[in-house]
Length: 204
Image (cartoon, rainbow, N blue to C red):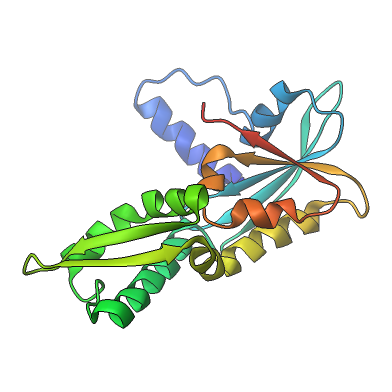
């Protein structure tokens, strides 16, 4: 959804320069919805590093994109930064060690965030274990609710995009890539939406 016609033109130029035979572009939301055989309208949710987006898709004999909304107020990097802050605050409180004070430790913690979030989704909490610059060990427990609260603003922006596209009072299928549900607290928020069927699209 975040690709403008100008961006697609640039992608086409790169593909042609690389010798790729390109016949055209297919809208990702339409390609996602088409095999599902849905009888109701659908809204496909998307989250990139620097954006959140929603695309409304009409379903039936033909499947076509109706409208997209892209917001730069949120994205995976914003969520990761908020989670770094949560872990740092908890670790400072418990051990007096700040993992964001050392660049190498911060980078290791950043790399652990997907696993940390997925584990809290699965079990409700996860242990963050970090080695300090001098080889000392530091541990802290982080709960799913802590990560969910920290990511509330990007989640709200995703919901705002969804509601702006949704026709008032009409049931809708909300299509979510499986990877997004590894974000702590997002599934619970989406399940509270009224008259929305949550459809999870597996990887691949």
